[in-house]
Length: 156
Length: 216
Image 1: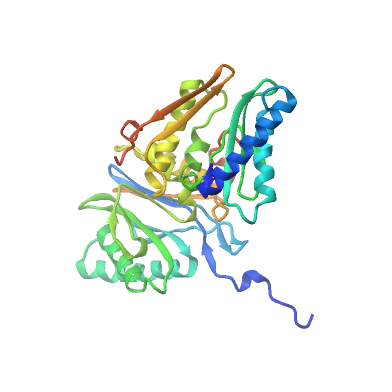
Image 2: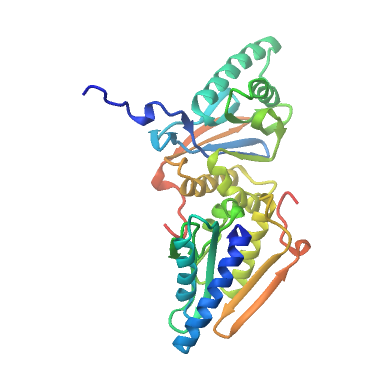
């Protein structure tokens, strides 16, 4: 979630309800694309009132792991790696340079933690702790990296 | 035709959108810039060299309003020539940076340009100074221009103390390439200037010779 957190929370709550209804109708867990689409519909139809963007990522049986980004105006695209929010402008260069396809779980965690730490170091409205969620076929794991355990760079 | 409106880009301010960078190494400095000059959405010059000499071993990198930046550089070039004749030897990098800063600070309401000053002198070797908004600060490296926002993370992660001249040149080229890919106001070719005790070397790296990344 990024942008106005109030809008983002409201949209997420509505999307959760839509999705759980959808998955009851389909009698199976929803596809990642379905979740992203629900968010996109809400953002696009209410674009004049809302200021919220989302990155949706997950695993489903049909396409495996996927990442989608829904921008402020309601555009939905699929990308192998994506960043968002105010701090993201500072790490476009880092992500472009350092991302490689088919990294391992540990490499991905390190890459994401580094990217967050770099953005938090430059963006005055980002900071605190880093929350990471690892999603695989087997399930979901939540990793929290407190501020003092974040990677440090040359000027710290 | 009567009443034909002139093209919109004739009346828009010309900005060197830009990505500029300067970095110190042991014994000198490397400066780098892109080459795009934009007036609104039009590119009015795609091969502009934004690395401007202030003296034999002192260069500055221009960003912001093209007119403001060029004028400041020319004025300081003249003032430095006079100063170096007065003292009878090559000027210090700090002196050049001070001259730039004095103009940027005095006229800060009227001007909108940021110059990074870098060079080599006998007293303190390679030095990089940032002069944004009229401050003066010496830094191991400095980035500037609209494209710099996108590469703060990259330079924070990749910069190490004690890099060699070749490492610095590679670092500058990589940074410029990443910024030029993301910033609409930066692009074209990359210009590099390497200054040390023995020589000042200017280089151009054409678009297709720039480093590419995973999605290109």
